[in-house]
Image (cartoon, one colour):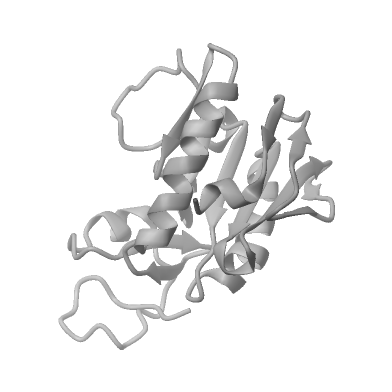
Length: 191
């Protein structure tokens, strides 16, 4: 994970202090996705077409399966603390959630966070985000790995950590009961 100093023209020198959300908000809008993990800057490229396809298809499946008081929302800003800020690919939020400024959402309002893996984010999604989302108290975390067929990994919060994930592979009709009933074959996410 590289860190860059937000107020310098040379982006390769470490700042010498942890990044905060205030520093992050001063970065230019350059098409990259910037997140913070314990003050370290995580930089990711814009999503690929396959990534966007998986998110779109999963969002449609979730929208049809969710109770009327919940909704799937893409790429929201999740502020955990001054040094922890993430942009999940997809989350489930209550529809009646006040949208005070439209910029930041709290993890306490999220029933589910979803990340779609890519070669550049795989390690982050299966390690850093698993720990961070559990620490933030998000009851369910799903990780979709398109390069694995795709495969859907389902994590459920057990205390303050997620238990081992259950893997659902493409070609297998799966019926989930938590956090709400949903029937799918992970292969649908790439069709």
